[in-house]
Amino acid sequence: MFVTKRLLSPSDFICDECGAVTTDFVVLTAGTVGLGIAAISVVVGGLSDLSFDIRDHLNGIQVPGVLFSSIYQEDFSNGFGDWSTLIGAHDDPLLDGVLGPFFDQSGEPVVLRDFYFADGTEFAVLEFDLTAVGKWEANDDMRFYVNGTLIDATRLREQNIQSVLSDDSDDTLVAYQFVERSSVTGAAVDERLAIANATVANGATKDRDAIKSNVNRQSEYAVQVVIRNPGTAMEFGIGRNGRSPYPGEAWAMDNFLVQGSQTDPNAETD
Image (cartoon, rainbow, N blue to C red; front, side):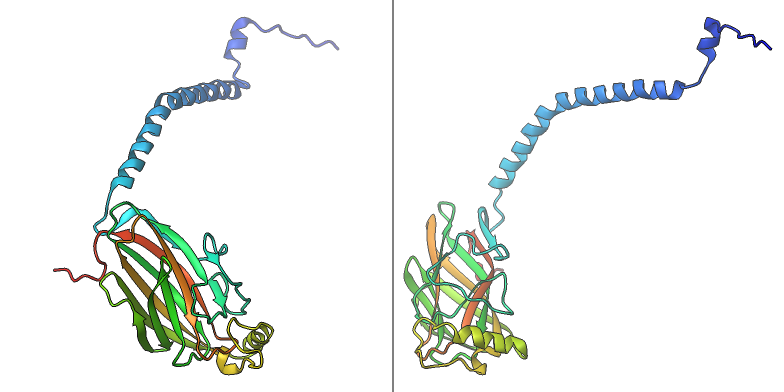
């Protein structure tokens, strides 16, 4: 049995729609891509110029009291950053991602950092969180230094906050706000005791052991330091004095915010 095949005529080929959608889609997609490339080449230069204009405009804006060019924020989640530490920090089961903790009680600045401000900045405003570990005695005080000069020493006994030394000028203001006290129990106390007793704190006597009251509590404070006329560069230092030092009592800082201001942040406004 023979099968007769009919030859397709040109009109048959034109009318045949098999595969037409795929063919059309390829052509249309190629055309769309071409138009997109052409459009990008036309607008990319203008968008680049516009982005730089927006950046320059924002850098030039001054919200009242704040210079955007001199803001510094650090939560120490990735280490100490540009802070210089003159002593080593110690491990702690509860304090992680902070500047510290430090057992130091020498009274000298043991952590330092330079901050830079725009020329003509009237106030440097530093705000941060402080954790005080242990039962601090009446003679223990936190100390802050600016360019190597002691500007404030404050005793911290939870809610009993007492400034014992300051430069008594309008050029510096240090304010503490007690936030909370928390108790430490269980394995964390034992671990803290082991760490403290394995390390002789700077200035502590070797025959004195850490006891639970040195490590079984910690208090949180919010601190603000305001410096008038800081200049374009200012070194800020932190230390703690302990006249009767006990191993285990420690301190740490976190959530630093530093900015330049043209107005006193504590000034009364109408």
